[in-house]
Length: 258
Image (cartoon, rainbow, N blue to C red; front, top):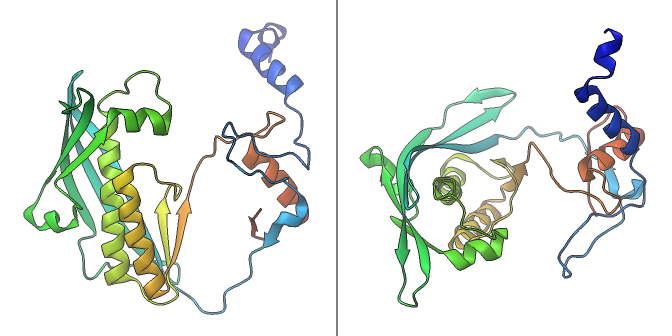
């Protein structure tokens, strides 16, 4: 690297970050804007070693993806694919009772309500007739006020966003069928992303999934590949936890519980 490259704008950006981003401090707490949130200090005694399991269990995964096909200011059409997979003894095995992959189209429009406000009307259309039973409903209605309350949108979100909302609803419903037919006592279900919900009707679907899992003694987990949470000192929450855990358990698997 020559002398001139050290003075480049990109290098100055990196040096600025290095100067101000220090190592996280134990005893820091998550940053939350909600007054109702309860925060806990991030300390070593809240990090635990994951015990080894003597009995091998099946791991079931469900994940989806969606792509916008056509959109304008007032409508959107998306194609969504949702898939399930099962692992046993570190090998993938066949999904036996339900389709391994389902696909559907979703069409979203803006619809005026009787009170003069607007709602997003999302219609679901299975790509194949046999996929219809894995769609929780034909129509999803979400009021614009509900969207703004949940996500803090000051302005109206792009309408193609709601292809992803349709995917979330169907993921939960397909996952319930997946647990019902493919997993047994003590098995583990993994959903891509967190287990958080938002929309009113989405919560009802998640309740059905949890009730069935509890009945069959199937463990529900979520796998988040990224984390945007920060601490009150302005550090990355997940990086701080990882720093502390790596010192406590440098070669073992661990989990954090407040």
